[in-house]
Length: 400
Image (cartoon, rainbow, N blue to C red):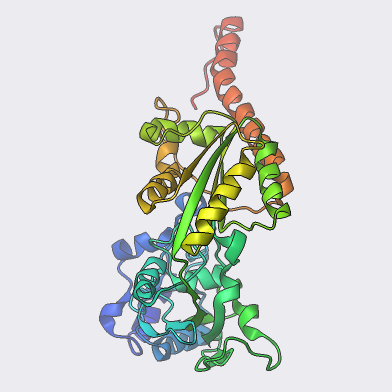
């Protein structure tokens, strides 16, 4: 690729301003990584990075890639956990760092039109004065982009009630592999539904950039609930956490968020933030309800009463400061994990998986059991090497 890259960069500078085509090796290096553990190990540097400012520029870049049979990787905030923003086979990375405009916020029709490089948190801040919000709420919301959320059908704690990103994408402007541009779902439509044939929008959402590159998004937004409350419940058995959720469902209560922390997470957070006073036990549940003030006041107390049937301890947070304080425990988990074993060096490698609610206790226990086997193995290896050395003093120790 060393002889190909200069020619490729030269061609790209014909369609994109020279200062937005990056081929300097040192400047390319950060684009070899995203938030995935895979990228830390593989170090796949792209040949060229292009930073377009319009759909026309994206289309021109893709046409050159098509003509030269060059791989193309769109990149948003680089917060993905699967290496999706990394050029695994070299080629062109298209960074959307310059395409982050809010084109329109249409409050009466509950929708917004944005560019794909817009950060999720920036959209939420812009919607706040209009009394609106975008319901999907990924853990990387302060850094991830809307284009990345759509490409990966992102979700988060609010998926319990509000669903995933796919439920909120009404239309997409899309650059296909040959550089042609299409619009799905009637990008300039104001309707919240469409029944005009195959739903190409839903086909694209979650395709991880394999079907095309989004350059503009029409998103459905929702009225922002005026109040919320969080019930914190501690349990002695993992099965009781799932049981409490089932009890809520039986009563017709659908929380906006239900987040579980197992014992290892709670112990780490208690070291990191002892002031939060998380209860001891096998697991902790955060259950959030939202709506009008009257509804929240009633629903939160009903949730707490139902949780008390199985929980060993419960508490209720109703003012925003207390709620933010509780949620800081969850958001600080990655940092807290580093304190779990203070005498060791630890790399936090986040993973994203989905299992049925009924299988959560068994999944957590399986993960713990496997970790326990690895930890015991690390402890036993030095002892076994020492035993071998005592049996055969002339046998050299292997360096590890």
